[in-house]
Length: 154
Image 1 (cartoon, rainbow, N blue to C red):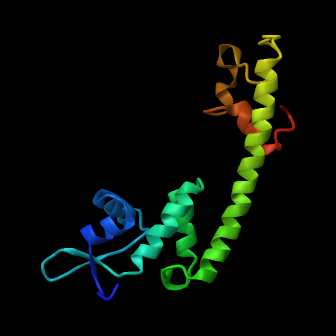
Image 2 (image 1 turned 120 degrees about the vertical axis):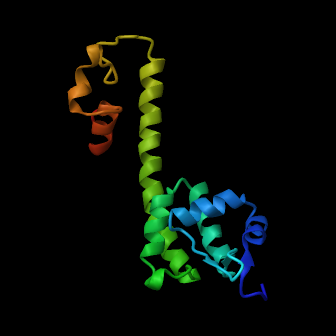
C-alpha cells in the first residue's frame, strides 16, 4: 500500500468485490473517491478498511444503513480505527442479540404451532380471516405486535 491512490479495479480486486459494488457503496455514502486529471476514480488505501467493515457487518446481518450511521458517528467521517471497531461491534452485538432472541422465540412458537397438529386456524395468532388486520397496517401485523411485546402474546 505504498501508493497514495488506488484505482477502482485495484480496490475491487483487493477486496474481492465487483467494481459495481464499489460504485454502489459510493452512491450510498459508505465510501468516497475523487477523480484524477484523467477523470478516473481514485481511492485512498484506507478504503480497504471501510470495505472490510462493511463486508463484516453485512455477514452479521447489519444493514448498510446501520453501517452508514456508524460511519457517520465517527469524527470527520473517518475510517474506523481499532477502537472505533470495538465500539461499533459492541453496539451491533446488542442489536444482534435482540434479533437472535426474537428469532429463537419465534422459532419455538412456530414449531409448537405447526407441530401440535390441531390445525385450529381460529386459535392461531397468525390467522387473519378476510384480511381484517389490513386496517392496522401492512405486513405481518400480528408478528410485529408480538415483537413489540417481546413475543409474549404468541
